[in-house]
Amino acid sequence: MTNLDFRSDTVTQPTDRMREAMASAVVGDDVYGDDPTMNELREYAAELTGMEDALYVCSGTMGNLVSVMAHCARGEGVLMGVGSHTWKNEAGNVAFIAGVMPYPLDDASGLPTLESIKASYQPVGNVHNANTTLLVAENTHNSAGGLPAAAGPFGDVASLAHEMGMKVHVDGARIFDAVAFFGNDIKDYTRQVDSIQICLSKGLGAPMGSIVCGKREFIGRALRHRKAVGGGQRQSGIAAAAGLVALREMRGRLVEDHQNAALLAALVADIGFEVEFVPRRTNMVYFKTGPKFSDAASLADRCRGRGLLIGPAGTDRVRMVTHVGVDENSVRSAVEILKDINE
Image (cartoon, rainbow, N blue to C red; front, side):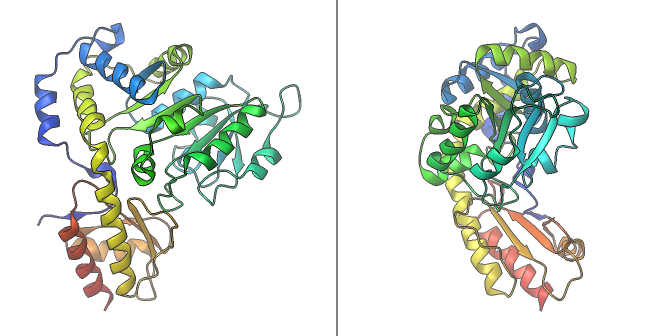
């Protein structure tokens, strides 16, 4: 049975162009800095984002971790949303690996509120608290429904943090979904921040890896931390080759995922599920399991038996994500399965 896989955009398969690029990649030893394909990816990512330098990392989680470590000394504090990936889904690594104290912010709207930033900020010089020296913001915001933040409100958050003396890091795992949604340029975001992490292995379709971009001095520190957490790889130009194709060729098609997600949301609502409203929908659809199923896991199990893979996202909350591996026909087939199961 061929499954319809809507669990995440991480399940994407590399395109034929990526496989060709990987097979023919010229490689060296990236720990020594002489892998030419990896160096090309770093240069291209830095140019694309308007940053001075870039660093390849194994995953988005590693990218966020080494960024926090490069920005913060042990014992300092970092502000992050309570709904953010860095708070909920990265195993508490900023605390037990980086030795940095996380302070929670209200980010139910997709961005930390200005009020919560002011309330949680701990100034340098206060010996009683972990001084907050970094703010982490997520765009698009996964648990808020894949919600993209526009450059204006995003800039308001970044500006306040800078005015208060903090650096700003963006968990931009899906930043190009925000760019595609608003039709703007990634530099509209990156010019307002100190660093950004971008996943190559989600909607962009590469099989692995993320890229961290920032100032050259920052990237130098992040490189050392990458080594410390075991992220140095050797002939990683094979992965970089796929990443180059992802950045050069896959950004423009993300709007198709948004169109398919909008269709999915409408059809799932039509068959009786309670779909969460998102004012700006990108590639995610969250909905409640409904009275027929006791929890999300039981609904996911029933769907799996029919060849549909969906993602439990809580006790009675389900997530479906559109990506390059599913098209309009896949959406309609998935909804038919959900309809049959729910009747």
